[in-house]
Amino acid sequence: MRLILGLAFCTGLAFPAFAGTLDDAKARGTLRVGTPGDYAPFSLHLPDGSYRGADVTEAEKLAQHLGLRLEWVPTSWSKLADDTKAGKFDLAVGGISITPARREWADFSTVLVSDGKRPYARCADKDRYTTLAAIDQPDVRVVENPGGSNEAFAKANLPHAKVTIFPDNTKIADEIIAGREDVMVTDGVEADHNALVHPELCAVPVAEPFTHFQNAFLLQKDLALKTAVDAFLEAEIKSGAWSATLTEAEKQP
Image (cartoon, rainbow, N blue to C red; front, side):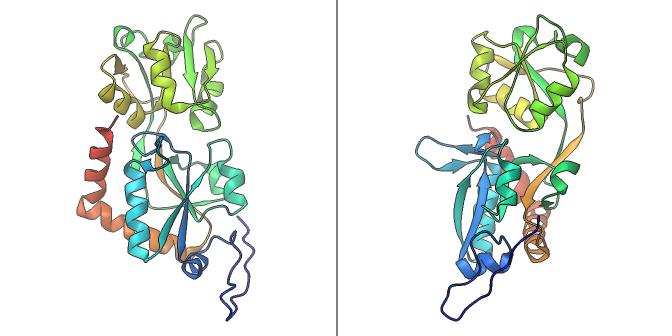
């Protein structure tokens, strides 16, 4: 991410809003945090306009720690790259995977979760989809959300299955419960969360996750921002606060 920096004037007309550095955030008095808001247990955009989830709680605590107001900036998985490059937020949260492609235009915080792609399905079918080969069949209806690593995984690994890209990730569990779709391959945390809050659904007992990856906060490329965020998150991890926050968020529907 190449950032264009403005000059700080005595009048208070400081850095342009799209700069995205920690100095800019302090000059504004606001930490701008982007999130798709559709991925429990990390970040959910609620009907009343508020946000809930483990990453949401940590972002709120981070802003308070830095002495800044928190400003939520809606984004989506398909717009995450463009919105980051445009400097619409200082950092983004919501269960974001660290990938080489994303590292080209963003930085990442210290790792919060190590995970892997796993399926979930109706409990009656949980022993049917235990391998990629079993899922990658013409009669299997796979559903994924658009624009993120789930869609990319399905396109790369499930060429024979009937893959539907469903626009609202918060409703995918309902599609499977209703029998309109059969299975979703997603981050293991999300598979376990949906199994926990929907008694009709089960995390499929695979021998090993289909992939291995790590989740973190996505950051604008600013060393001061990364240093501050990492110091805060590492303290949260060491104290056990992050683990407690994630565990509590996993219980919420």
